[in-house]
Amino acid sequence: MKSKLKKHAMLISIIICMIIIYLCTLMGVTSISFVEANKILLNQIFHIDLGMENISVGAIAIIWNVRLPRIILAFVTGGALALCGAAYQGIFKNPMADPYILGVSSGAALGATIGIILKFSSSFLGLNGIAILAFIGSFSTILIVYNISRVGRKVPVATLLLSGIAIGQTLSALISLFMIFNQDEMSQIIFWTMGSLNGKGWNQVIAVLPYVILGCVIMLTSVRELDIMLLGEDTANQLGVDTERLKKKILFSSSLITAAVVSVTGIIGFVGLVVPHIVRMVTGPKHRVLVPFSLLFGGVFLILCDTLARTVTAQEIPVGIITAAFGGPFFVYLLRKRKKGGV
Image (tube, one colour):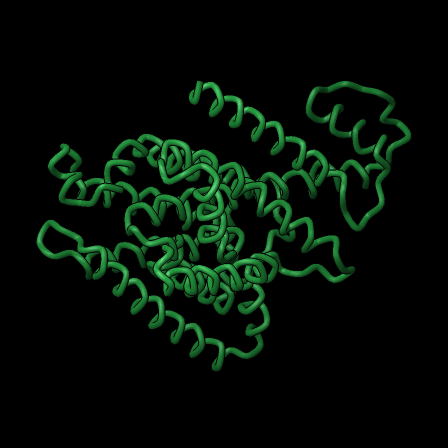
């Protein structure tokens, strides 16, 4: 009975996700009628022609090349960050852990800063020069943090977290130094660090998707081990789980996912913190349920935040500001709850 309910809940969640993607594609500052938007989607997706001759090329471009890829990228990014957050919170046994706690965001920001200052314009596999350097920066950071934290063949969780915070702060200081000496590029660097999906298209979706799919597959195959880890490392080892190998697997896959999405979107904080915690309150702590539902609702959460960011005012707001507006108070709530012994 429970398995049937879970399947039904998952199916209903997927349908809700598809409806939200559809509705948000129809919404935007530029006015395109409901009928026209549906004709464009049917024509582009299913090649059904319901009279496209009266629809402008501009309207087709807005729906198919601007809104839809942006919404799909928002879903992929939000889902990926929430998935990583759920795995991090499980492995660290800390509800306040999120994908950026190991300095991944600072590494990406430093890479992007260098790219902006050097006006690095090369491109590779759909990623521009800034995105490439951001990816290299974020992935290099996690390798540095991991190697600093390693004690023999083991990686103590507390040491890993402290190393991530220390390296992150060091890299943030370097970024500030670069901005002081390159004030002409300061506004561009600041805008990138706020996180935005503006101007993103199919190239970015295609570039990010393989990394996210690979990371998600690795993560989803680890849910049983993550559930056993809830009993504690010693118990998990006794039950046959190689906890050190599991840590490496989760760190690698989550860092791969986070590096890929951050390199394209900039730093979008708090998704990995807020969504898994809310999902956990509804579904419980078991990762076989928590991980897929975090993936779905993380995507929906970021789609809604981005739709708000691009429609609430004539001047688009970086989506990172919207997620921070939700995430900041939620983080304070977690701290207060933890202080009272509730977490």
